[in-house]
Amino acid sequence: MYKIGELSKLCNISVKTLRYYDAEGLLIPDMIDKFTGYRYYSASKLDDCYRIIALKELGFSLDEIRTQLTANDTEKITAELDSKIAELNQLIITTEKQLQKIEELRKNLTEGESKMFNILIRKADEVRVAFVRKNYASKSDAIYDICKIKKSLPKTIVGKRRIVINYETEYRENDFDLASCVEITGSLPKNSPYSEKILSFDRSTATLICKIEELDDAYKAMIKHLDCTSYKACGAYYEIYHSDDTVELKVPVCASTNEPLYQAEHIALPFENDPDACGKWEMIDILPTREHFVYGKPKCGHLAWLNEIYFIDGGQSYWSVFGWTKGYLFTHGPKSQTVYINKYTIENYEDRKLLFLEMYNYCDGGTDGTFNVPEIWVYEKVKDQHYSSPDDIQKCDPIDYPFINDPAILGTWKVRDFYVTDLSDFDPKRQNWATDELYLLRMEFKKDGVFSSTTKNGTNTGVSSWTKGLILNQRSKTASTYFIKEINGQEYLFREWKSGDYSFGGGRAYWYVFTRE
Image (cartoon, rainbow, N blue to C red; front, side):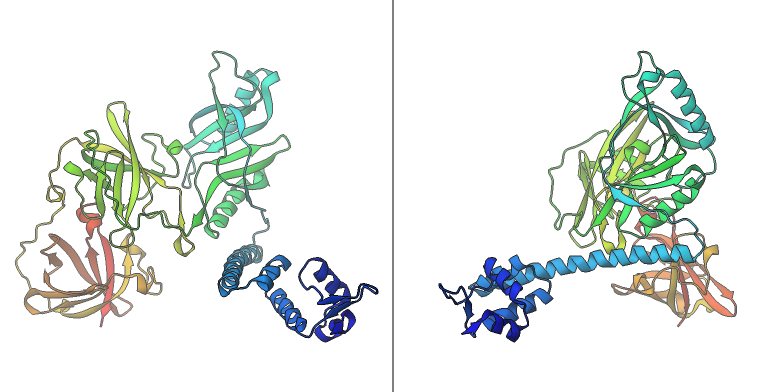
């Protein structure tokens, strides 16, 4: 048996700490002399001491160590270890994000950005305001309106803050969709020309503080910060002005999640007809929230892959649309037999029908996960008719062209890049798409119009043929243009890519770029 002092020297744990372990029930002496109070420990307690030291070095708390020491079966010990592994993995993720933010801050400072904005993400209080929304030629016009609102209200209800809500989602130099607001502490007078509104920040909100003259830089810093983190803006930007020209810039945000947003297997909801939905719809806008929408003033300047939607009779599926039932449109998920369930609502606007689709497809956060807040894809009905099958909606090209020889195209071509924008953006020195993300890998042009292509799914022969200037696909009924261009002594083949986006989605064709193999 060892006295406490002797055990202290053997295991290099202080006497004070050993007494504390005793009081906590972590390392109890084998015997205590009832006359002297001396603690005595058997040699076997050395093993417990070493185990405590080892577990502490691995980051276990005393409570967790106590559980380990008292566990009498492997399952309990394994469960504790699994819990610690999960905790440490989360710590790694948190630390990596902190490092990323610190590196970004340092990069900004070293690249000449003189102002370092402190951006916090947290909950925000609601604000009651007198509210008017309209198109303004400039921000200064909105500030002028705020002054008018403030002067017209009883002083007893006017609060300290003035607010501009910016509903634009892309950069503009004029013609802004803004709301001018004045904080109020009581109800508006009857017959007030202004609306009374509660500005609620139900989600986490990214906030920074700046001066009025720094506002443009603050927007850039906020957008850059969100791009570099696992958050995205999911609401309007709020400029909250204080009396000393201090401005709070706020925007609701959502964090990415690794939880899938799609159903692992297609759940067949019972079909319920919706006569208002049947027909053809064309996209008119893509927005972060329904609140952003103003008819005739689109916020989004680009097309989506589902630029057109067809609601085919009976809820039939086509291409990447897995079917529909009243209130829901199903689209393909990332794996076979997985679907996104996207809710839709239909509203009448004057003599038009508008469809607001809560779209989860492509609302992803890259490698960090996906965002559980959908975008709002807005469509207008353009054909109020019934379609009985996907054949009724497929866009088909003439493909009965005679064969014309083109000796310059003969041979095998390997993929170089992919473009969804104007081909004038092509730069041989820059890779637009990562090579491992490219679907079409190789094409071979043989004599007499014989053609084969290799994709990630394998090699296809007999599906397509070629004639001078065109690749003709008999299965999809598309005629895709090709041409060869020499750049800096290197031949490049540009091939129009007409996928389902073109045949069913109402989108434009894209372009693949190849070099000779």
